[in-house]
Image (cartoon, rainbow, N blue to C red):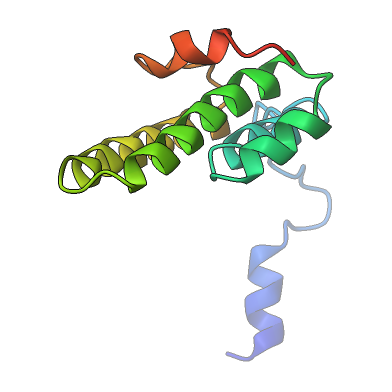
Length: 123
């Protein structure tokens, strides 16, 4: 059996209808994936500031960027506190990972304590 025989076996015979799936895969609206990606990237420390200043037109991105900014500022504060600061850094890192995943999935997930502080940011 050569390559041409294998190719012919996969093709439908002439006159036979081609079998298609009953449902076409659903596509996201244009820009939805980009918004999710920008929102997710806003949890990466300094990018939260940049994205918050650049993407002022999207409430979804601003929601996540404000939470990312709160986590970034908390990370800076706890960096200088010995012992307890390292434990808080771990909690902040978990918040970053959870926020990143939720934002990438298109979910507006308020992080405990962080969301309350983020609401107070007016930009």
